[in-house]
Each structure stands twice: as C-alpha cells, then as structure tokens.
Length: 170
Image (cartoon, rainbow, N blue to C red; front, side, top):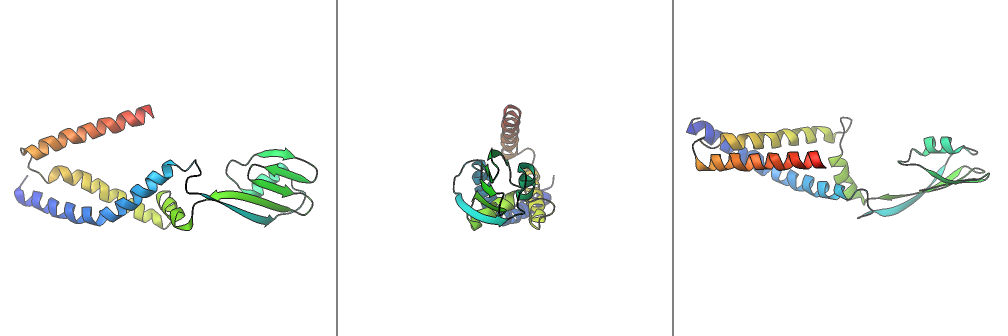
C-alpha cells in the first residue's frame, strides 16, 4: 500500500473518529445504563389513572393495558389486582404504577433501542457504519511491514477472541 493511500485513510479515520467521539460517549453511557434496565436504578414511580370500560375480565384488562409482564395477583367480583396496580370493575378505573426513567435518561434509552420505525434508526445505522469504517481503516493506515501494524493485528485478534468467548459463554 502506498504512503499516499495510508495518509488518506489516516485523515478520514481521524476526522470520522473525532466526529464519532461525542456519539460514542452517549452510546457508551446509555449502554452501561441499559445493563441495569431490569433493576430500579435511576427509575422513579409514576402512577396514572385510566378510564376503561367497566366489567372487563382479567384477559381483557391485560389487552387494554398492554403492560409488559402483566400478571393478575387477585381477582374478585368488584376489582382485579395486578402487579402494577388495580382495576375497579364497577367504574372501570385502573390505577397503574410503573417505574420510569427521568425524561433525559429515557431519551438515551430510546436512542439505544431505536427500531426501523424510529427517526433515530438512521443515526444508529450511520453510527454503526462509522464504527465499521474506523475498525477497517485502522488496518489500512499503517504499512504492512510496520511494527505498529503487526502489533495492531495481535490486539485485534485478542479482542476478537475475547468477544467470541464472551458471546459463546454468556
């Protein structure tokens, strides 16, 4: 590979790397936060009242509320108790308590969990492609005979092995 080609890749690697540095800080923060998503870490309780049709069955109530892991704990003639609250069969009022992140933190979680229906989807795809470019261009920036290239290959191989071991044993 010519010195000019390596220099060009270095220039683009540097520009894209600096551009993505801020994005990486946000993704890293939200990724660490998502590790604790099954706990109540940084979450607060939010109770809301919903007016539903009266006299719903437990199955109909679950369909109306669309709560994750909805499970009835007690069912009577006048009310249904479920893990996140209660429902009055006489007047149709459901009191639901959920645990949510504050708005700013929820935005970070939404960024990390974006789907193709989300406007953030394109940012996630571009970020992934940018990281892929950075990974590949790391090997093109150095002349193959240079010590930095040879040690870079060793570190990349070690990283690949560690990642594969973690994925297989996780």
